[in-house]
Length: 198
Image 1 (tube, rainbow, N blue to C red):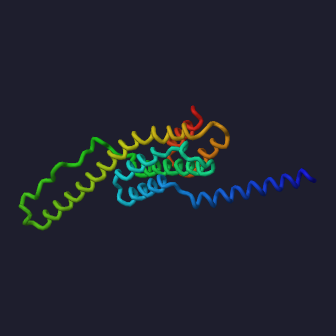
Image 2 (cartoon, rainbow, N blue to C red):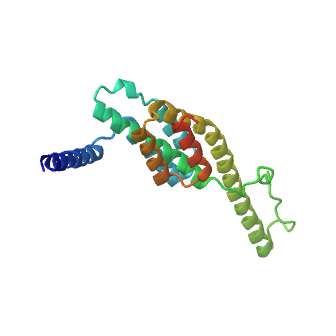
Image 3 (tube, rainbow, N blue to C red):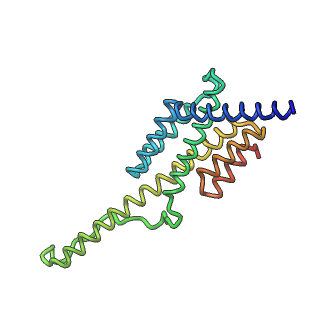
């Protein structure tokens, strides 16, 4: 009977600790992870890769060893992981799998032969110019996202490898966070392998 009472007390203590950690998690967000998250949101709004690169540079500054408080260190570790994964998830979401780097936008669209006097020809010219401008923007975004992905992927995998041990609790945290935030199966597999040092 006494063992059951102790077990119930221990469970209650664990639940209270979990709730306290959840509350602290809501209150605590490091300056670095908050700024990086804001940069990722800026990318989603503007569809320019500069904020994503800035987020990557910020996250590379996270130094868990400099956080003396063990609880805050664990929270920072998880926040940084979530923010790194949000960054690569944003890249994955915006990469066009059908992108063809050989299909380059035109440098110049020829104006109508009539010199623009014919309204229909003029309209077709303006439409072609607009379509080419949009194609150029998409081409530039896809090219930059691919370059950024090549730079960021090793960084996030290194963070996972160096920040998490192979103990079950650490492995579970990585696996659950990857499952929650990463839809790309190849990315998820690579991150899980990085955590388990495979």
